[in-house]
Amino acid sequence: MKTLPKLKILNDPIYGFITIPSKLVFDLMEHKYFQRLRRISQMGFSYIVYPGAHHTRFHHALGAMFLMQKAVQVLNSKGVAFSKNEEEALYIAILLHDIGHGPFSHAMENSIVENVSHEQISLLFMENLNQKFNNGLTLAIQIFKDEYPRKFLHQLVSGQLDMDRLDYLKRDSFYTGVPEGTVNAQRLIAMLNVKDNYLVVEEKGIYSVENFLVARRLMYWQVYLHKTGIVAEQLLVRILKRAKQLSAKGIELPASKNLAFFLKNHISLKDFSDEVLSTFSKLDDYDILSGMKAWVSNDDFVLKNLSKMLLNRDLLKIKVKSQPFSEQKVKQKRDKVMKAFGLSEAEASFFVFTGKLENQAYSMDKDTINLLKKNGKVIEVAKASDQLNLEALSISVVKYYMCYPKNNSNSRQD
Image (tube, rainbow, N blue to C red; front, side, top):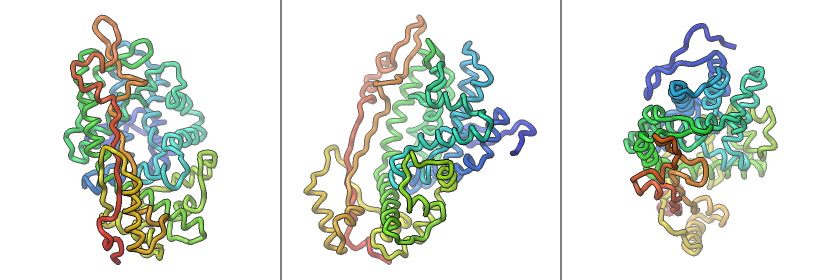
């Protein structure tokens, strides 16, 4: 294991110099499980829309840890005491919070593993690393799971105003070039405090909170739920599902050893042994891309054409509206594809499908953002704001989409 001979500093394009706070944090960063995040894109296929969005989960994890260091400094200056163990545990929890992401971030959860979230896999990684590092992550895991009595520590890692969200909004805004997502993360952190064991924002920080919530709303519609990005992600999900179907029939597909394992096996949460976790840890974006590059020559019409579409950015058309699409409309589109290419209904459903987009910038149901007034009273931010739109931001807005081929000839070009 590498040692930390002197203070290690990294240069980040968003915050400048980031100092690695301890030897244990350094050793965790050097571990192959964490280094894999250099090969996992932060925003999946969003670079199809925003060419600069090639940053990785590695970037984001370091940025979130930097913000956590700032939060600890701010709270310390306001009389909120941390033990050395609590400080280090916070840095570890935020550093590893996304370590369970699979290739292209979210697509794995809906395709080649069976309803296993990246949060669940992150916890498995943390528990595995805890064994390797002599139980040095025990407190970090308690904070991550919200089992530690000081509740505000978990809120800093996973809450509505956590270091994860503060970093990804600022970072994704920077790399996509979408200025609407810019948030003053360090100003927000400077306004943090703790009251009755819960995280609060000082009253004078209300406008920074409003800006944060509006920025989050805009980034979802403009970037995370951009319709072209949605098509690309859904194509990837369906490519992996089709590859898994073919593998289940005994058809050998060109794939890396690690990808082939997940294509040939049904893996649910209960199946994640240390051996399976080790195999998962070797998967990254390059496994998927190299697989698709081979699959464009496959005999299977569905796998071949879906792979070609995504690699060449010759995507499906997408329509978005406020009401669900009728079954009749979907059937018409599917029938057209079935007739044009001689496909079964199941095969055509890979090219014609529906879904929904949901955007809720702020949830008032639990873990609300609370303001600390000068008189010591705590009030929920939407009630304190003179911006009427904050309550509107708590309403979940749902839109519906349908994807289908642009025409019946573009899917069969060799």
